[in-house]
Structure formats: structure tokens, C-alpha cells
Image (cartoon, rainbow, N blue to C red; front, side, top):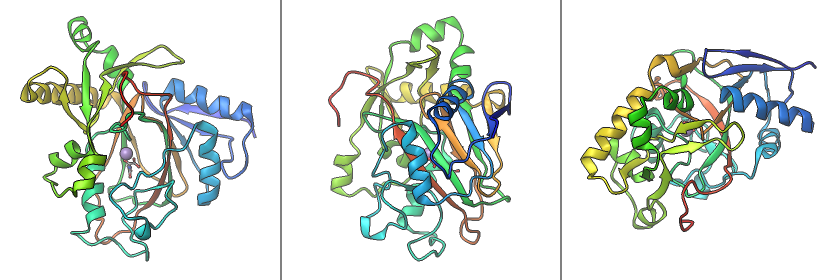
Length: 294
Ligand code: OGA
Ligand code: MN
């Protein structure tokens, strides 16, 4: 099958056809996906009707798996294998999560602009999200281009952010939504990690802003000043020009580079409509700042 790639916006996102993610792919196909990702940061592969095993095998082409994404859920309550982030609104038995369900509360954090696993010392590289059951009334996923956002900063702001380091933690993003019930062991496992605010892409050399809802402090700055600044940067970085809005079709497989994008899911009627989307994730090369692995 010939590969074809069609840009979806001037900056970010492209549609990639000609790859079958249900079968082993060739090194040339892996390289083509990576080249597409380096250019567009988000790729949409339509018509990928895959099993969990096929999704895992496809994901392993793009680096070591990030496991244990369901940090608030005990293993016995998982619907999917632990290598998956279950971003559906379903419990183990396939029923829609109740309004006050703990996992539902935590996953509401996905409505805030974020980069996956930015709260880990070694944050995520690619996220691969498979649309098994999708919604059309709400539930879009939006992606913002952090390279375009960096490029559009004025010279003064570029100089100001160049060497800044932020603290990221799941506690910070959840606190923004008023979620404050953390178990003592969660407070330990969610200890903030440090990340550079400006990253340089290892292949393209392009700089990007490493922003995320998980940021709760800028090292060396008073907290309120830091948070006001981060809000300004997030507002700048998510202006419509830099955003691709993905409207889901069943069996879309969407890949994004967490090093160069932020994303968020939009609201839908999750108490009555089923949305079954399953994410696998790979890890990036290493910490963005020299630090002890958390
Ligand atoms: C994710 C996420 C968005 C969505 O999988 O990391 O934020 O559309 N999901 O469910
Ligand atoms: Mn996410």
C-alpha cells in the first residue's frame, strides 16, 4: 500500500494512510511514521480496527512502553492490561462510570491542556490513542503545537523562558479542578518532578514550549507569579491558529508527540454515552533536566 500524508492544518496534524497497524510494520514504515511525526507532531491513521495486542505491538515500534498510567486505580479494578491508559468512561464490567467515581474524577484532568506523563522524570514520547467506540456529540480531542507557540514568542519572552525549569505533578493538575483527596502513598508517588520549559527536539532541532496542566511552580519564582505566567503561556500556545481539533471516527488511531504538543478532550455526556478510547504510550529518551529519577 503506498503511503500518503495529508496535512490537516498549516502547523500541526496530518492524516496518514497506507499503513496497517494490525500487522507488523517494516523499518521503512516506522521511519515514515517518525518522519511524519517530526514534521506534523500529530498523525491520524484512519480505519485501524485493532485489538489490544496489536496496539501494543504497534506501539513498541516507537520506544519503551510507559506502564502504570492508571496510577489511581488498583490493578484488580483495571479493565485493560496495565500497559494501557484506560481513558474510556467504562468500569471493569463495561458500565459507564458513576458521577462520583474516583477514576472519573481523576480523568476529568484530561479536559485541561496537558502533555502526557509530564509529571514523570522521564516524560512521554508518543501517545497512541485508539478510538474503539467514539462520540460525535462532544468528546473531540484538541492538539496544540508547542513549536509554533515557541516560534511566535517575542525575542524578550524567548530569552526569559530559555532556562526556566518547572515543577510538574498530578497533584497540581487535579488541584486545579478542586480534587484534593490524595492518599498518603499517592502524595509520595506524585511528588513533583522538574522539567525544562523549553525543549529542543532531538531530530529536528526545533524548540518548543513544554507546558502542561501538571505544572504547579517555576523554580525560583514566587508561586502566584509563576502560575500567572504559565497561564499566559498556555493561553498563547493554545490559540486557534496552533490547534488541530480531532473529530473522532471509529477506528481512528491518533498518534501525538508529547514533547512538542499539548492536548485536551472536550466535554461530552459521559454519564450516558459510551466512549471507549485506549491509549498506549512510549517513553522519551531521558529527563529534560539533570535530576534524580523520582
Ligand atoms: C489521553 C487523553 C484525550 C481523549 O489519552 O492522554 O488525554 O480524547 N485523552 O480522551
Ligand atoms: Mn492525555
